[in-house]
Image 1 (tube, rainbow, N blue to C red):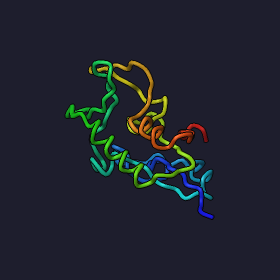
Image 2 (cartoon, rainbow, N blue to C red):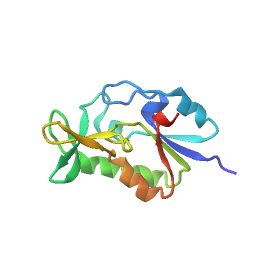
Image 3 (cartoon, one colour):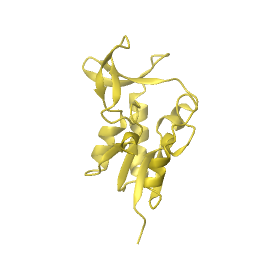
Length: 146
């Protein structure tokens, strides 16, 4: 019998993969899934390195795009491609725990801003819709649930 599998934001596992080169390790998350095969997830680090320019979810003409804060580069498609590749590499998971407020991973907690940086509300990071399409019926949680 194979182990159950959990996809967890790599920064919650202690990997120093955040934009600022730091981690947000949450021991309670690691402890809750110690019986699982843990699959670390961070779509930003392989594409942009660590540390890297910060990104934001920006609403442009009623569409949410992932934009680098300083350069203004739209990296939406690059991230979407990386996340789709991740899903193909890991087609089956039993649980998902992601970093809240993240432009990549946040679930209902990510600030959505306008072009001037004004917060319009809270929403999802880019991975959410892709995960919901690829991992049907898997509840998405964040570290605040632990």
